[in-house]
Length: 170
Image (tube, rainbow, N blue to C red; front, side):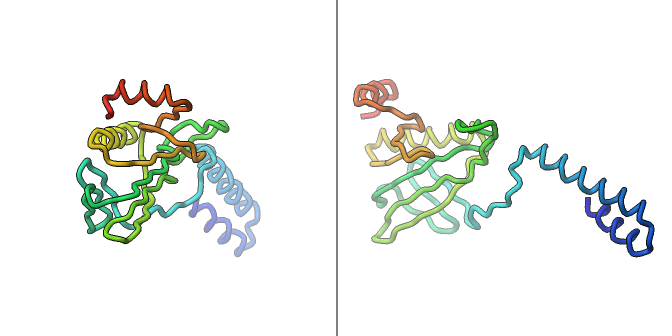
């Protein structure tokens, strides 16, 4: 694509307008093909410079480690994983709008994280399941701010109790 644009400029500079036009059209076609392949998701996002790793015992953000038993107010907002169908449209979601927030030793931490696939989201569910089994208070929410358990929206207390029993959560 860059070669087409440079060629367009070079041909225009030497007054070879037909070649400049062809180069310009090729550049535009290339851009359209790339946009179509990306399904319109062409924004560049910066999630975080720090890797975020959650295990049943710790949360590691960059080079800092936080023990789960020292964390309070653990909140996760799980928006999506990469490639997830958008419930409100025909596009696919990017998996980057997920956040974790907690307080440790009086300091509130807030981090964005990326779920790269459905399998990655399933791994996060396994960690959350361990948090629930250890009676670690966790608040999960979905992309619309609704309360979830293991990324599943439950509307009634009966659904919550059945869910806890099914997943052996105290």
